[in-house]
Length: 209
Image (cartoon, rainbow, N blue to C red; front, side, top):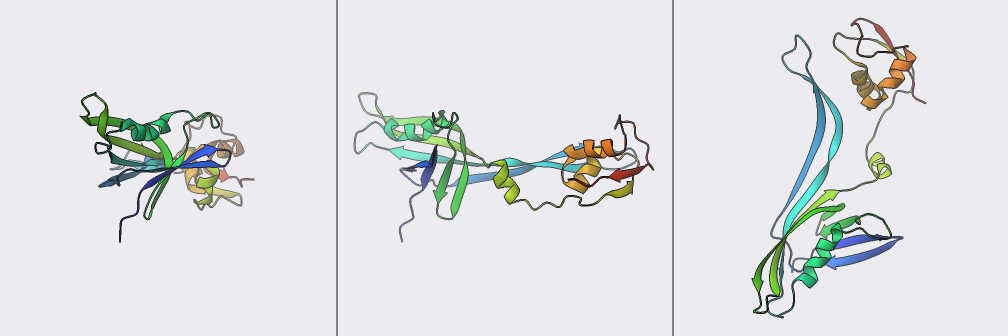
């Protein structure tokens, strides 16, 4: 069975979509994912304490091959469709979000970088063979991300003891899955300077509305 052609589906805005077929399927592609952590050194401990901050955008990178030598036409007529994904779409006021679809792979993102290498030319100087190194970066709205991340926020007021070296952002991350909510804890406990806290203090963890 013939291998299905890869394609790029482009969101043009206002419900409009455009499909660009890749001239030749890539020989390989690379998917990269990662997380961002904050590391805090605690006196007396052998290793720093890690706190998850957020995930990082995944990237999809590959080489796309284009060849129009037999037809004798300008290969840039094909490559410009890929390079053009870096341009601002007038309906969106930003480069378009697109999907790279090939078999079971469906990667949604924006084109972050394209490097064009032209390797064959007609006598007139017109390029007829090119390789594009393309990097897509994942792109999801806040709503889309929250739909895929199960979170459990504190649904009742709690009290806990502050450990030596522990900070409010650590408690917020543990209780709310959001280190940025440390201000809610500071407000509930009348804490003006969260950097000057003594271990052993009783802390109220308020219920989030």
